[in-house]
Image 1 (spheres, helix red, strand yellow):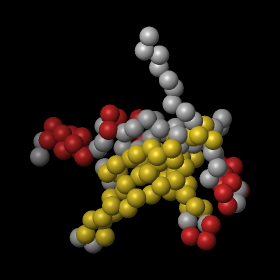
Image 2 (cartoon, helix red, strand yellow; image 1 turned 135 degrees about the vertical axis):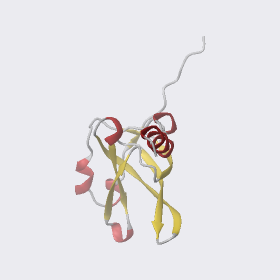
Image 3 (cartoon, one colour; image 1 turned 180 degrees about the vertical axis):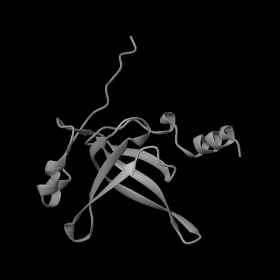
Image 4 (cartoon, one colour; image 1 turned 90 degrees about the horizontal axis):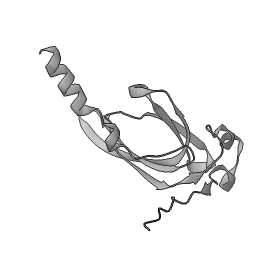
Amino acid sequence: MSQEQITQSNSAVIATPADIPNFRVGDTVKVHYKITEGNKTRTQPYEGIVIAKKGEGMSKTFMVRKIGADNIGVERIFPLYSPNIEKLEVTRMGKVRRAKLYYLRDKKGKAAVRVKERQPKKIDTE
């Protein structure tokens, strides 16, 4: 294979910035992540609060925290442009004043997922 064919095949697999919705730290997102077990492939939804975004360019990542069974917090780091992310949807927009929400790790119960809701900006059509 030539270098052009390799580049074209790789760019077809990687998500483009247009495919990824605009989300911020504090938003609740649902990530549909493709998991391969042996020769089977399934999609696992993972819903939680975005507590951090890091990196630049193609190596950008985001960290999602959810409360699992027995009120145990589970954090997972996803590469933003991963070909394994089938769909990324924002279920709730959060209003926070920090870039990193690591303080949620110390919270228990309902306080660990409590973030004020952000209203989308209204555009005047006059």
